[in-house]
Amino acid sequence: MHPLACTRIALTALLALASCASIAQAPPVAAAPVVALQVYAAGSLRGALNAVASDYEASTGQRISLTYGPSGLLRERLEKGEPAQLFASADTEHPQRLAQRGGWQAPVVFVRNGLCALTSDKIEATPATLLATLLSPQVRVGSSTPKSDPSGDYTWALFKKADTVQAGAYAKLDAKTLKLAGAADSPKPPDGISAYGWLMDQGRADVFLTYCTNAVAAQKEVPRLRVVQVPPQLQVAAAYGLTLRTDAPASAAAFAQALLAAPAQQVFGRFGFIRP
Image (cartoon, rainbow, N blue to C red; front, top):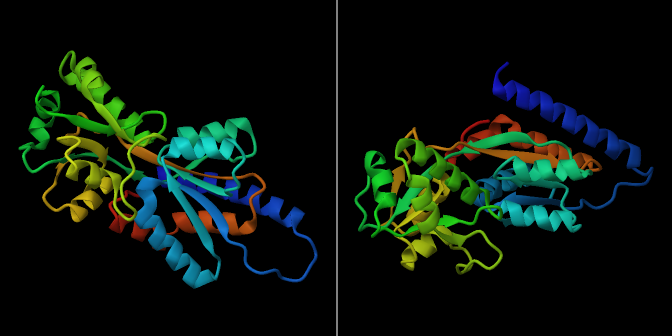
């Protein structure tokens, strides 16, 4: 069965449970004012999801309140009781952990991403020379923080692949890579500026490994930066997982369904995401 078909089947079951819960709880009263749907989402989704939510609000009248951050930190906030009804993570592990605790549905994949290298204009790297560039003692490599931000976890998975290409690469990259973003105490850029372009513009690293969508957005903010594709033998696919609370209202189920529909998927595609 095609992966997208599996995703749709899983989401259909997820939405049915959420809708049934909503119907069972709906009191027989007059229509109330529209309440904003609380959505927590990975920071790498900001541009695309803002656009999707704006289109959805315009077409349905349903308000969407979006909170962005590193997926691991958002998951911790949800575990502490913060009231989002829908969680869009940059991986499937964090939403799965919520599901295992109870109160959340098993995640479904709604978009995919990949890793790219964002480099300074002083770095001459190509996909073929990227690993040698990363391993060079003179090159400072930056990354997001594993556990807190899936981008960091994917980066370390790339390092493990690098070890199969060149023995000893993992140990060198693990030791030298600077965890510059994604943690609770990471330096914060000014409002409206991405962390990755800002960190590179500040000279904090020579190469930053991040999602391709982040790298492209950062280059738009700081045009002198360069984006280098990760070669296939090192590439790590990033699957983004979507989950709903088991008692989520029908509005959350409807928005989740819209994220997999063609109009939203076309918007995600314009921002560089890949269909599930």
